[in-house]
Image (cartoon, rainbow, N blue to C red; front, side, top):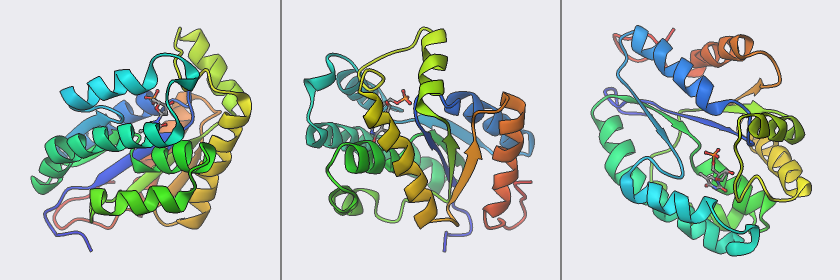
Length: 217
Ligand code: TMP
């Protein structure tokens, strides 16, 4: 059970080009309009040090890092992010909306990258402790559609350059995590128009335990 005055940790997950960043902004605006102090952040990144690690891990040649090295870099970034942003905000009663969190490591490095879920989860236990998402919004999209969207936006990078099979495993991996934890995950069809997706994202807030004296709806 979360402490009564602790904030909430909401994570957005999904493949590339699923619209997480747009939906994150809309969700934060919705929460702020209801008087909830909200911190928008992202992984890998969210602190100066973690942003430097992000540049290392998301840039360069596709085969630059093994899955294990990727995982350790992601976890180093996550450790700094947890210490400097996520835990202080939650302790101060703020809500944290993070564009990606540990489920990305579980899927990209664990299920798609070949390390397996058990290894990733075991390494994460001491890092996360009790800091786990209260709600995870999975923006589900065919990776081919996501890639086209990213291309249209002029995006690209080490992960986008990975093979189609990898991105198919990413999509299947996220859906498997959602099936395993149906209370925490809300799966949202991200192939639709932005406004329609936003309605489902905001609707998913109903899954959160009500906070005393405050409503997320
Ligand atoms: P983004 O482009 O969605 O911001 O994320 C950067 C890339 O990093 C994305 O392709 C997914 C990848 N990633 C991992 O592989 N493992 C992780 O733990 C995180 C947070 C991101």
